Image 1 (cartoon, helix red, strand yellow):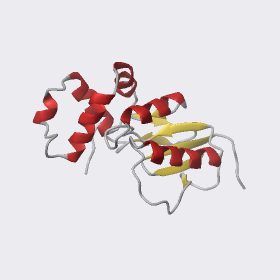
Image 2: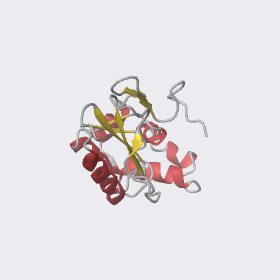
Image 3: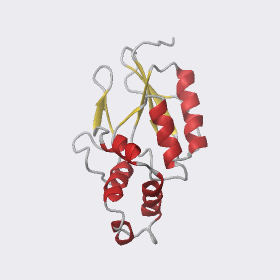
Image 4: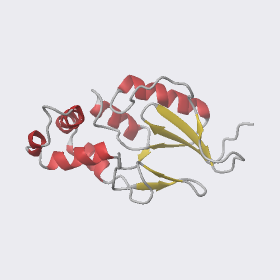
Amino acid sequence: MRCHHNVVGIVQQSEAWVYDSESCEPGPRAVNPGCPPVAASALVPALEAVLRDVADSGADRLVFGGDTVGYGAHPKECLDLVRRLGGESVFGNHDYYTVAFSRQPRRLREAGIDDDPVMGGIAHAVRELDVDAVEWLRVSPWMLRLDGPAVLAHASLHEPEEWYY
């Protein structure tokens, strides 16, 4: 049985889930189980593939688990696509660093962009995004309440502004 009420499509990197608040099954279910891991963050072809899976699921709300930018070659294009689709997003650590370094781009060199591929991706996002895109990231919430009792955060519900590795 497939319901199409209160259904939320959740996108986080290469994975997509559907959460149905009125389903008998607890928690979200995978939309694309067994999909090979491909980072959709800032990679347009991967993001489009995951979004097709979510569209086919019947989701009527689209939310993103953060880190929309900071990984791949297409941060501007991915963020434009998310915004054009009306997607909501929680604030991820790569989003946070992109916003922070866009305010002080000289500090990127100190952060190790020459030696750290993560910082290199963030530096690329800082160069590519315009002021409106950075502002859209900046105002993203740490957590989003989904239908029913579900809450989405990038890393931790207890301390969503921290990223424990």
